[in-house]
Amino acid sequence: MSTSIDQLSASSTQEALLAALDSARDLPAAQQPEWPDPVALEAITRELSICPPLVFAGECDELKANLAAAARGEAFLLQGGDCAETFAEATADRIRNKIKTMLQMAVVLTYGASMPVVKVGRMAGQYAKPRSKPTEVREGVELPAYRGDAVNDYTFEVAARTPDPRRLLRAYHTSSATLNLIRAFTKGGFADLRHVHEWNRGFVANHANARYEAMARDIDRAMRFMAACGGDFDALRTVDFYSSHEALLLDYERPLTRIDSRTGAPYNVSAHFVWIGERTRQLDGAHVELLSKVRNPIGVKLGPTTTAQHVRELIDKLDPDREPGRLTFITRMGAGRIRDVLPDLIDGLGEDSARVLWVCDPMHGNTFEAASGYKTRRFEDVMDEVRGFFEVHGALGTIPGGLHVELTGDDVTECLGGAEHIDEQDLSSRYETLCDPRLNHQQALEMAFLVAEGLTER
Ligand code: PEP
Ligand code: CO
Image (cartoon, rainbow, N blue to C red; front, top):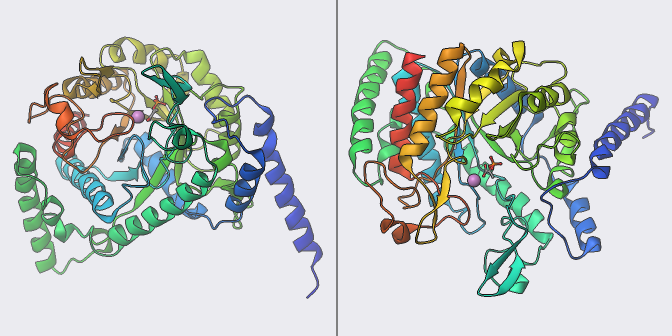
């Protein structure tokens, strides 16, 4: 079979587009591991670059449209999952518990605030972590910091902590398996609203569960009413659940950026939504450059020292066409700062402040080390930052469009407080995170009820 001129020119355009992505290679890239063996790394990135996409570009566009609706106040984004996923915990039980928790939170928000909820997991790719220090010292021994399962192992030993590029490939395959299960759960009947009670089964009984059960009974009654009237909608049987992670490791994100055959445009096909972290949002850095080139919906984390000038420049670079749903700002100011810092930031953006999607991450500005040495957060601070987020947007007339949280479906004891009154002594009983402390199942549900109230007022 001969190659047509059309095919030839299509492939050279593709090559040109892919080459343009490599502009990021020449720029400074913060938070990258020091891979010891460049030859091994090269072989792995080449292999990654021919692995099948994990998501379809059309799904990314669909999510972008949903995020545009959230930016207009017609929907609400719920984004949640582990701080750092691990290979060991990519099990059916753990994944199911996270999905159940997210579905429950979404029901609380949808029913409590009559608001469609866009569901996005920090799942199927959240395997790389930025660190405040490149090394960790224990009892006089200094080793590379743990940078997430995609880079090295948490065990404090030389071999374990040495970055190993084969882990990038394992991150890809584990993400693929996770996403497969997510798709099976959300499209295969498990997320059917008629199972709203079952999502609560298996979790220990507590106040938040009881409140959820009461709501689930109402929903059940409404569902039976609709069924009796002959109503039977597809929308009640399946759920759209999207994947997301921080686009941190360029040796993973770049090989998984591909040219979409429908549109001829580049997409990051490792997740539907990717974000740039607080430590890698330098305007002239490689992360901003690479994500400026892809067509996915993208996010940027904004901490308390962010200036409006910097954000305006980010908007010009990442969203020059002001495309609806393209850009999400995830603010993580801390409960003590949000009411001071966020208003000026929003005010300084002019018309763009009403166009982008504003999401609250009430976790990362509220982390501290307990006397026992555990990294933790007070549930009350987390809740207070969410309240501050609604207050600030309420006062300015902008839209508080979503929530970004670190959570797990398991009954861990990592954040202080909540209705179970977890205190500093309790932290050690079930502290399992390898990175930041997560809300447990009950705290996550409590948070959803609070946000539903905020949304009702909005
Ligand atoms: C995170 O989301 O786990 C994280 C590291 O956040 P940030 O970039 O906001 O510090
Ligand atoms: Co975190």
